[in-house]
Length: 377
Image (cartoon, rainbow, N blue to C red; front, side):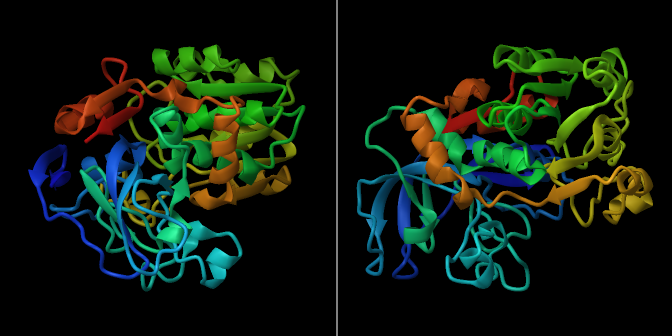
């Protein structure tokens, strides 16, 4: 089968790899109909992780079940399904408590597994024609048959739940103001989720015109940090107080204002300044314990200079960690079905799988309006 294979920094190729097969009675094989390129994939693509050549990318996957193992009870061939990017067992302590992003079974020696991602277990990705899904009764979310809402449902694999998770970590409530740093797909989903949760005003901080315009279109307030200090811009619009809550949808590859120089802690520190005393921060943006491309020795070891004193002084609460997709995906699916949510406004391009190398290049360079790419094998 064809799959997107990592070759070296800034290079992927569509190559023939072995088609997956049933290896356990609880497995299913899914024929992929849609799979997305995630901003997290770019960390590997750029050589900013320990990913080795040969890994098949792709943790945002949906499709039609082609084959089921003998132990699968709730699924059958022909079912349309979307899979959380978290690979989870459903029975370990963390899964039982709802922390499926930190499964203790699927990736021995580490809490958490994912498809097609470095250090996240032995699970090939789904930027391919087929995908093996383990613990399938637990990991597959069934969808209405047909092709309706294809790109909306595709986003249930990761970025829609992850954006919602950022709001959950921050405890966003109706009537509150929220600052979202980062207007990429996850940031836009966080802003959209904040509005769905009843926030009165949502600010989206970025400098890419297409992203800021998308923020405006969904009813958020765009803040271009290239035009001035975003903290001051937001405080001017909140009577000098700041927002009730904040979401970091950028992570460790943040750029210092006015330059292209990376400053990994800049978003965290800006949020500490932006959010009012006794507010809260949600941090779904990715931070890593080691970064080979970090701008200094401390950053390379995953250690950042964060304004902990001011955070403590202001009594801010912080929630972090990757999304436990299964905690949210069922009711977000139902919101899509009922017409209450339509997250596919972030999708900029739908392309065949063989155009993945070009799509990676353009998405990484943020050119030609590439904001979220869905591949169709």
